[in-house]
Length: 206
Image (cartoon, rainbow, N blue to C red):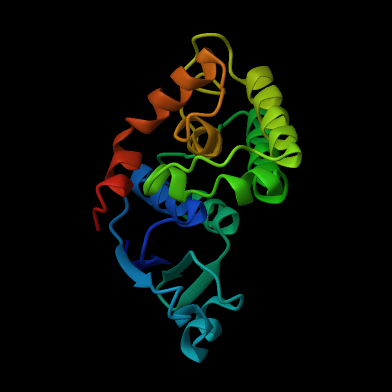
């Protein structure tokens, strides 16, 4: 690989999207530099970063002189440019299902994401109960996850893919906060959470 890779992430490492891009890079065993962006200080709105990322969001991947934001776009770009080892299923139908799940996790469940922010995972749980909307979102997440994760399975599609990490983190908004989650899904989250690429994020490895 001749052109260097740099991943811009939030300095507190609370962004699930930054984590997912980081995990994809780790799983592909690519050397990369990390550049923290202080969101509280609004560094993502500074002209240089907004010009680089287009959207002023984290994560942003810089590959040589090419910059790309949005975690799903970053993951698919890495899969296209560095196909081995893969982070998405090779079977077209499974790959499509994984992408469906990724898109859904980014676009739905807003009440759950607001009431169970990732700080309950990365910092400390909160004792406020879920609202009616939050509970409905949690129930929807559990229903979808239960339909996809077979009893006792570690992975969605027989082998790890990035959608496993993404689903596990979303479920962990509930698990880490002590909200009710079926035992099978708790085991699935635990299996994903000990993966070395996830542990590297939690240990704040560069």
